[in-house]
Amino acid sequence: RKEVEQDPGPFNVPEGATVAFNCTYSNSASQSFFWYRQDCRKEPKLLMSVYSSGNEDGRFTAQLNRASQYISLLIRDSKLSDSATYLCVVINQAGTALIFGKGTTLSVSS
Amino acid sequence: DADVTQTPRNRITKTGKRIMLECSQTKGHDRMYWYRQDPGLGLRLIYYSFDVKDINKGEISDGYSVSRQAQAKFSLSLESAIPNQTALYFCATSDPLSQGPQHFGDGTRLSIL
Image (tube, rainbow over all chains, first blue to last red; front, side):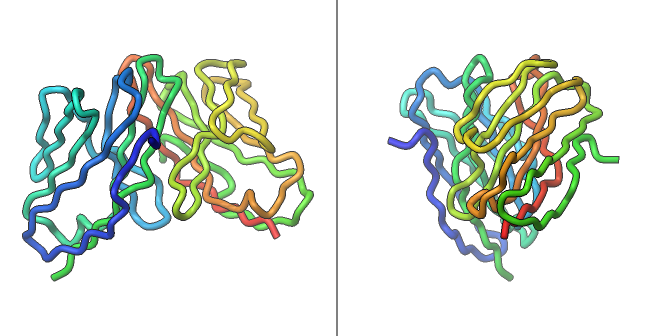
């Protein structure tokens, strides 16, 4: 099993749609979880941290399921500007293992 | 000004050449990282440093070396570049107190001919 796995997509959705991405991780000792957004050939930018209790930031909701070792990102009311690649990142407690998923590509069309 | 600055932004060079990529940061973070990104392979960690003079190998350190002479600077060297080192390289920093996340530079696009 790969350390961090994401469905590469692409996910093609119309504006206004709700879309969800999942990410699974193999190391149960992982402590910190993040979603990053990366536009084509640009640097990854932090979208949001993922907390055990789940967290929401506007149209974005992140969930963590430690028992099943997966993380999810829900985007509501998709905008054209949401088109990007979304990277799942898992970090161990010591910060010595930083594993990026390969990313899920989202394309929002009008 | 960017918090994490990489130089050069683009570089084309020939096989066998020595290349140095520079990274500097104004965030005051102790931790710095070098990644490469290849299509279909995602971001892979090359080296990381948690303090001045602290150097740790990442997933793919072969063919690379790094130097951390100051808190704000972390340089990556390719001693003898080869074509399969053609990639997009990113430097990143993080604050250990926040357990991540990482802040990335704009990237260096490196092509080895």
